[in-house]
Image (cartoon, rainbow, N blue to C red):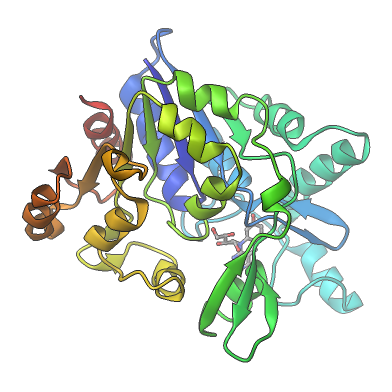
Length: 315
Ligand code: FO1
C-alpha cells in the first residue's frame, strides 16, 4: 500500500509513527510524508525546520516527548552563550544537539543542496522507514499580522507571545511563486490514500495547500482522508484555536471539516475522522453528504496511534 501523509510537527509526528507501526515491516508498503515548512526560520545564521525535525526525531526515537520539540537528553550551553552575546532570540532555545542538525543543514544548503536533498541526507542517519519530503524547496516562512498592524515571524508570535496577540492574517511571502518539491505531486497522485494528519489546519496544513500545484494534485488523488485535530471542541495540543479564529473557523471538528471541504463539492476530502467525543457532530455532516467516521483520536501511545492509522487507511 502506498500512503502519502500531509503533516505538521507534533500531531503529524505521532500520527506517522502510528502509521509506520500499523503498516508493519512488510516490504509492500511505502509511506511518504509531505512536511510543512511554513514554520521554518533563520536564526543566528542557521536554518531551522521545526516540523521536518520534529517528524525526523520522532521517527528516529530521539525526540523530546515531554516538551514536544527538539532532542531528548538535550543541553543548552550554546543557547546560553548566544543569550550572553545578545544574539538570536532570548525566548527561543537552540538546543546543542538540535543545533548540530541546523549546522549540518545550513552547511549543506550553502554547498548548494536543496531542502529536499538536505532532508534526504538528514533522514539517512536513521532507518526511519518513511520518505520525508519538504512541501517545497522555496523558503516560505509564515508571518502573522496582529491587531496593532505589526507583522511578526510565526515563531515569534507562537513561542514569545504564545499566540496571545490576536492574529488577523497569516502570510507566506513567496508561496505563490513556489512549486512543490520534487516527488510531492507524484506521491500524492500515485498513493492509494492521502492522509491529512491531525495537524494545525491553518499553520501546518494551510501552507502545504498554499503551494501552487498541491491542491491540483490532491484533486487527482485516488482517495483523501482527513483526521480531525479537534477533539471534543478543543485543540489537542498547541494553540490551533488562535489560528482558527483568525481565519474565522470555529474550534470544532465539523467546522474544520467544512474548512477543508468535501472533494465532491470541490474541496479536499473524501472521508473525515472525528473523535468519539464528537460523535454528535456526525449526523449533520452525514446529512451534508460527508463520509464521516467516529473513531478514538487520542494518540496517547503508539498502539492508539496505530489503531487510528488503521482506521484512516481502511476503505
Ligand atoms: N518552542 C517553544 O515554545 N520554545 C522554544 O524555545 C522552541 C525552540 C525550538 C527550536 C527548534 C525547533 O525545531 C522547535 C522549537 N520550538 C520551540 C517549537 C516550535 O516553535 C513550534 O512548536 C512549532 O514550530 C509549531 O509547530
